[in-house]
Length: 80
Image (cartoon, rainbow, N blue to C red; front, side, top):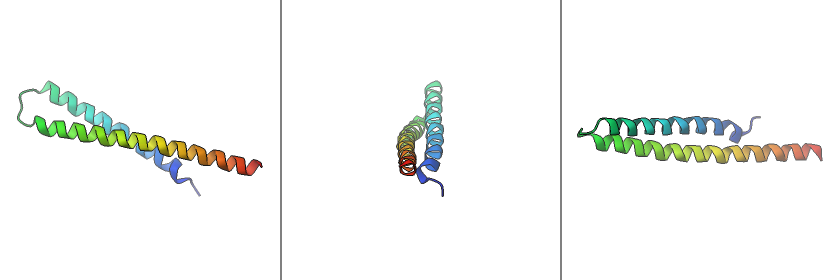
């Protein structure tokens, strides 16, 4: 049976990186195309993408730490 945390941290980290990269793209697009009326939409998309991406990255890091702790605990129980 696989460890739940070791499976989830990979997906959360990848999705977090993609959302942060998408947010940076929308920020760049918003800056380079000044004078348009829909700048609020791009600002909202970039702020939501950046915030959710940062949350997923931190959540992925927590899941990685939990997976490592569970792995060390299993090794410790098997050895002694």
